[in-house]
Length: 269
Image 1 (cartoon, helix red, strand yellow):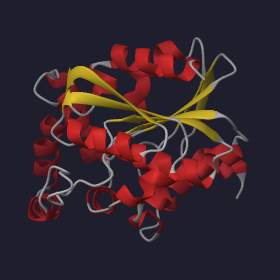
Image 2 (image 1 turned 180 degrees about the vertical axis):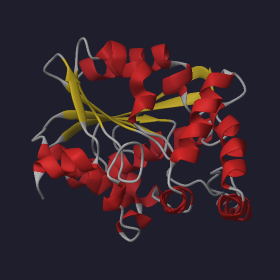
Image 3 (image 1 turned 30 degrees about the horizontal axis):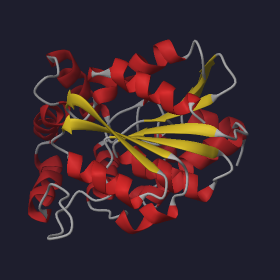
């Protein structure tokens, strides 16, 4: 696949200084701009790579394929395509929310290109599976949420955004996230939502030998501390850091803490 095509398809940006490369992967309904609070300062010391998944942000919507992106492996292929197009090795890959799992899949596929993972508020499975696992949601609840996307897309966005951000987030963040949801093509959003909320990657965690930092918000409506602990316990080289924060988008609301932890982890190896 043509390298220029991939860079244009995924709206890839490369900037910053330093030998170590940090690649940032955004979450569902978001785009690369939501990493700006972290990357604006980290670019002084690191080479930064940001991108949009096909169908998100300013990516090439014509490249969207509902079959490819029906599973998280399709989004992981976006990451590996970019890594190969830029010929990057030894990258620290930072993924928010579902991109924690997507990044894990990419690291398993091309371990020579990804040397570290940072998972920000990850979840390998959003559904409850008692008694062993508490994902946080019942299937009926998530199916109703997906159904709402068809019936009232704006209402769905306005309902989900404050839930994701948490009660401590300022209205500007809630408005930004809601706007990002609304700007995403409904077919793309629904395809990504199903791949995110109904997939189960718990069995894959032991296959990821890449050193991984799990950054967990103390209060998170989408991925609880129990989920963060589960992820860490099932990774061969997982390290959990619970931040005294609230919300699912801590790379926006508490970016200084997130940046501090990424720097410490990236420089330790």
